[in-house]
Image (cartoon, rainbow, N blue to C red; front, side):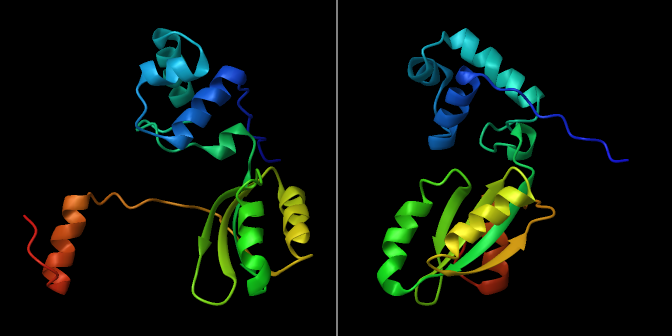
Length: 167
């Protein structure tokens, strides 16, 4: 029998802090304190607690959606007729399931980074899209970010592609 993952309980201040960081990861604790109406010390303690609960990365720029109840991650490609694509994009950007909307090559083609509470939630979301567009859904099982620094990237590109000297 599989272990059920414990969902972290967040209060309105935690959500406000995460929301502020999601909109600008460079905010100082003083700026966040002003936004969420808490002291700088309280904000600092809460950020530390969010990092300890693995809700927020050590760098403070990556939110762990799984730890707060979004157990499904997917990439949904949407192919909408050109006349609906612009308005559909605006509608998608305010959906709680949608993290990003990328316009990709092809008429009316968008790629969505999506989170959902469970597979049923994802299914309902995709079905709602299918009323106005064709979709293709891919479930994300695991994700790992490259650890290359910008300096390393530029050095490698310079060596491999001859795209200018960086040093």
